[in-house]
Image (cartoon, rainbow, N blue to C red; front, side):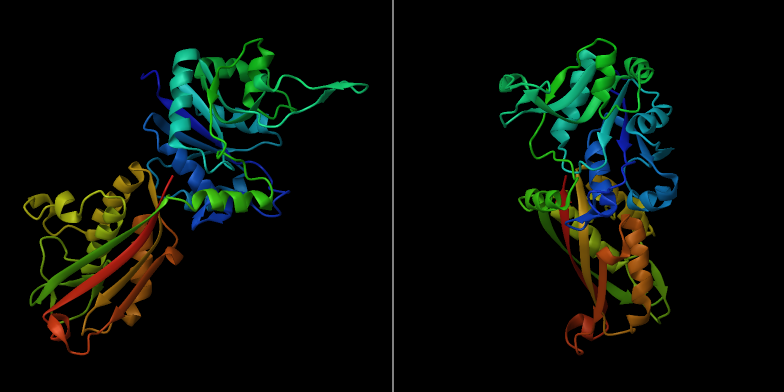
Length: 377
């Protein structure tokens, strides 16, 4: 087993009482909090298993939010306390390291995730912390004093431990435990501190949402544009957005020639600077002959997410004089959203004619434009 192979536990058992709603389902710049947290954890290739500790009644909802990720989550029932939740989830942790991360910390960086794993592999433990900025006072009930600030840290997640050590720590779990590093204290051991970022905030109150959106409002967003065109010929099926549309002609191409999906794929690849579909799926390769473009879109999404990007939305327009496409658009959106692993509300498809002008207007072919926004975790 690789000494850095990691089972990541996403702690999602909180009630969200101070937020007034389920904070894990709140959308930050188009993406749910739980998905952002999971995406961040999975951005490190050493994470080989994702375990979500959550109330059983939310498993189906969270499963939809986490669809299409590099790893499909394993769900474990959350308990009445954090200690119970991570103990239930740890039963599935059978790799060299186990990482615990709060589902309500969606802004953790890939660098923090990787540093925590590296330090745990070297020292046996890692607790991501940031130096305390404020002066604090400590009291014994009668008098107070200021402890040295340079020795004080704010504890965050992720926290990563050698799996055997973590199992011993869980034997000391008590209801009042609010943090996994406290379990290590019970063993008389000092966890290793890994330097974290102040932007790795925990969403607790509504004020935190404004700060999180402000943090995300910088250079995390990227725009991509895609364009494709195929000739209409007899003897071919007309497939657009994965829908087989009755027509006297179909689109000519090496694959199924789904011009709409092709434009969307190129917009996604372009936003992340990952090339184009001609590079990924060359028409000189026989294995792509007649290929289902929705299957190719799934491969594009896999590459996009491996590069640390998640789509916010896609807006596409089909240019076709005939046939009329309005009645097929809902199914196109559904197919595309499913292949991308996003909500259908994140996919817009429109169709227009060109008033008889140009090659599309003269029914020689069909074209499509697509633009998208992707966010980098």
